[in-house]
Amino acid sequence: MADGGIDNVNFPIYRECLSECLMRVFERAEKAQPKSRRVKSRKNSSALVGKTEGRKHSDDGQDREPEELGDFIEFLAHEIFDALPVDLQELSYAAIQKTPDLAERYSLPLSLDVIENLVSYLSPSVSDTVTTYSLLPSTQSLNSFLAPSFQSYISAVTAPPPPYLPSSKASECEVCGRDWVPLTYHHLIPQSTHEKCLKRGWHEEWELQAVAWLCRACHSFVHRMARNEELAREWFTVEKILEREDVKDWAKWVGRIRWRKR
Image (cartoon, rainbow, N blue to C red; front, side, top):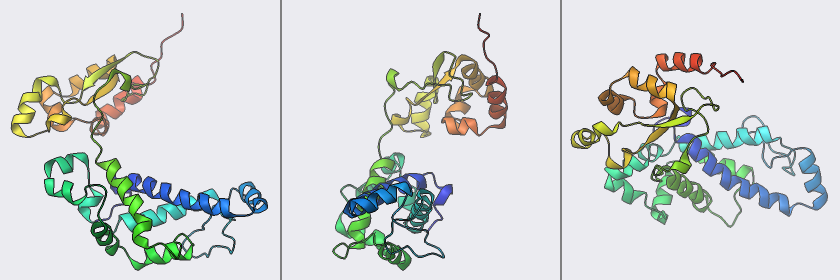
């Protein structure tokens, strides 16, 4: 399996999906506590589990700090995500459009067989962890415990990109970050290249309407830095544009420019 983690843009998405599932468990556990202990727990900013390395959770499980809970979620998310099949770690809307078999394999809701197969990739330490920290009731299997996080993750990463709408306008320039200047929208894949993009397979049709909201100065800079065909082939996302050193230098400089009040 590939090492997912922070190098995989999908890891934070899975971490959030797993976190949502765990928070429900923690909430149910807190509600089950006597009121007096719940109050004490809140005063201590408690979490229901502790760090997984070099430390056991307390008997009541109510004395852990939120930072420790965050560490626990991070640890467990890595243990699970890094063990999953590479095609699932790298799943995206574009991937399922290009690979019908992939779309079928991870169609929702997931079948019991698919869930069982995914769990089979995991280290026994995952089961040990959720059992040790009382996250897994005796009546529930690891498969059913993890299924919601798998399904939420797949739903999130395979969602189609939103269509361009005026209401989706950003509140600040996506290059320099200034929020006090008028914004214009920049077609990340210039319209003059759309026909060639489709003909040569550079992009799918659903990708062609992607836009970035830029101030006029940054909009002009982007068009100066590369011709339309190069923009379409190499610099078709805000993230890619921001990787360029000349863009970083420009954004740092122009971002300091403010208008004097009259």
